[in-house]
Length: 341
Ligand code: ASP
Image (cartoon, rainbow, N blue to C red; front, side, top):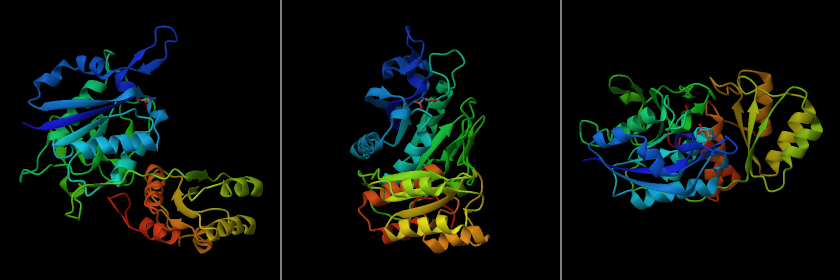
């Protein structure tokens, strides 16, 4: 009988309406599970842990990621798989963060939630939860776990966690991975795409990195950005890493004031990771002059990495206390399938 641990962090899936304000707010796990009687039909041993209190995922921070990672670490040997119930708003960030924090992972960590609360008649939560449990319990022919990575199960698809993005605030089909194929499609059965599944090259035991350094930020370019704005952001006190969201294939203004500011920041030891504002495709530094000058100034190419994976990868690498030059080297490696090189 598969043993699965559900870690309930909050999110719409478990929310109920506040009778006074009519706003949705997180509620406890027993309410959630009472609304999924079908769960008893699964021949699984299921235990649960819950965040106290459960939270809207807009309140998620690095300490919550550590709590989830520690819960998995402490229960790793006792369970075959883990299902994390989470709000959709920052689900792709948590999935990316956990993919880096859980080094040498060889068991499934399946994150899911829903767009409508589980108590609603048309909820997508019941389907998502049941399917996530089945994915977490799925075995390959040799008896090893089919999924050995952090993945997001939503609607009818399973996505690699550090490749996924929330793309809709309205649709049940809320997540997508624009630069990587789905790990599985859910129809009458669950059709796993074996070639897309990650297998850790290391045979070492699970190593959980607890420390994520929050001294990072996004800087999104817009036409008309002034030298003052750019200077102000690049000189943010304490900042160590910046995900620079550029145009198209990784292009930025090539004017002298702009490149000089970027170069000065790199020379101060700030790591600047160039990612595209486009949802599909990636940075190709040598395609245009405007992209070349950014590389020459010291920015590192993020290739086709998602924004969510880019910012959490910087947090993880700085959390390891690495020097900027070493951080840059790791940004050019795929650590757990987050980037195509
Ligand atoms: N605000 C909610 C959250 O992220 C949205 C959701 O769960 O869909 O917690």
